[in-house]
Length: 542
Image (cartoon, rainbow, N blue to C red; front, side, top):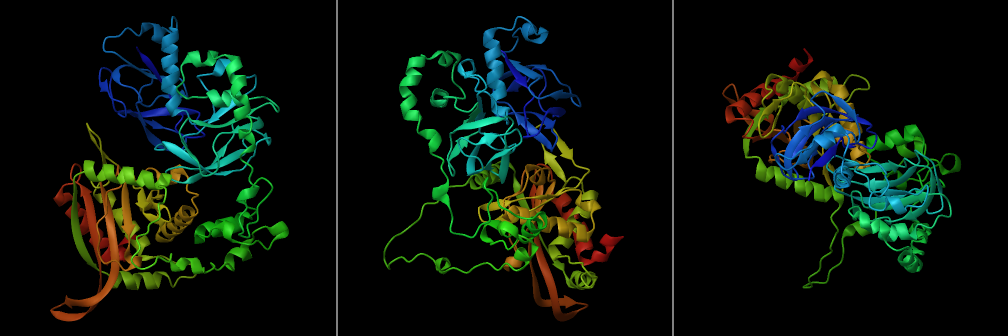
């Protein structure tokens, strides 16, 4: 049975998409999980994978062409199957229509009516499902509800904050009405497209809709006897009242508005992001408890005796189970895939840092200017990559893509794991611009406020553990990059210069390469170019 594949909604604001590249052609065999195409959205170019198996029978949008969300993108079916009825738009069987709906469902990221029971939904009632807020998101966790059952909801209102595999993001409503039902409590997780909430006219009974909802329910389920729904209604009736939030009131001095959001000035919020400060830990001194600039500037983290560690009697086994966060699951999946699919090899070097140290000291003597050694490394990498595009590449099954732009991913440690925000067009930015961008992105990462666009599109990655006193280490490649640079600490040690043993400063770096795209000599030449920039940083200003 032929399946119609529609243009997916790959971002929460996407209304149309452009096919950047087809990775399959008509006649190719398709397996579930295969990448069909690269689609350019309003935020980034993302890979779109197939949720079906079969043969690619038709491509409806050619490379470079644009179409609206949910319009025909391709058709997958059995080899040799007649799809003329689907292409002509007439004679489409009910079964084909069902298949089309099932194909579109996994990619839809905004709220939508439950396809399984749409015929039985009361008038004006909309089922809100767990949205896909990043291209790799498979499930989400409700961090905070900003609306409660009975609240009036307008289009554009923020319903909840949802933790994805990359960040905690605000999820806004695409409909207006009253919040009638909450299907997930704070801290609970659900797969994409599972029931999140129900919105509709005030007073509407949706207990039957909530109890019978299923993202993959057959059409026959919509015809379930109403008597059965009424029978179960008493059990479901208490559910809407469950998400009462008074029990979750925290003792911390958090200035929160009536709708549950932190009351903070824009400037104070920006300063907090830059410094990586959690706003919920601050007592505001402004009007009505609002957090203002001076609160951020005067904030000092409180020390707690709880940090001393848990007491365990001698000789007694003890452990604590910690549920894996969405971020931790994503890290485990991505790094495992990279380590076992990309043939890694490593090149290690040691650079003389005397000139770099003098250069940084002189540069930072300029008023209101501050750059770090990491900023120098990022800039040097960006310039070196322009000369060695094979290191700035991506691997595909049938081709290798050499990127002419340079987007540097900078690994940032956060409490839940590791995120890689991206400095776009790093080769075109000055050292202070790179420093400002890295500090801003790191602040957002620590507050879980990074957007998907700020974490996508890297062509190369830098991981720096030098500030932790690590001399040398190796990293796992951040796919789809072809290489990652591991940066160690600057060490004072005896070195030989002009036949004399003198005190010097050196830094060790290790380049992990994907042997499918970067040969050993290619990686070595890149490191030679990088050495020239880092050991003589004034050349980066030319």
